[in-house]
Image 1: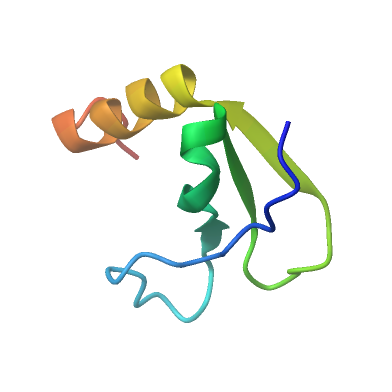
Image 2 (image 1 turned 120 degrees about the vertical axis):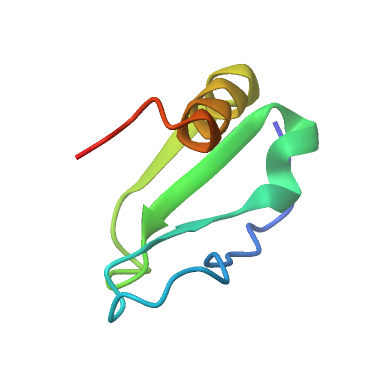
Length: 67
């Protein structure tokens, strides 16, 4: 566990009117990737294991998730 505060960021590709999530990538080295709704920054946060998050991002880049 860490006492380091999350430093939130949105993707530079987020041009959809603010319907985004923010990620605190600075905590990856601590084994977790916190994610929250950018419209509700004080609302709930989901914490993903870095292995699961890496697999999710790889799936997005590979086009595994289509609408």
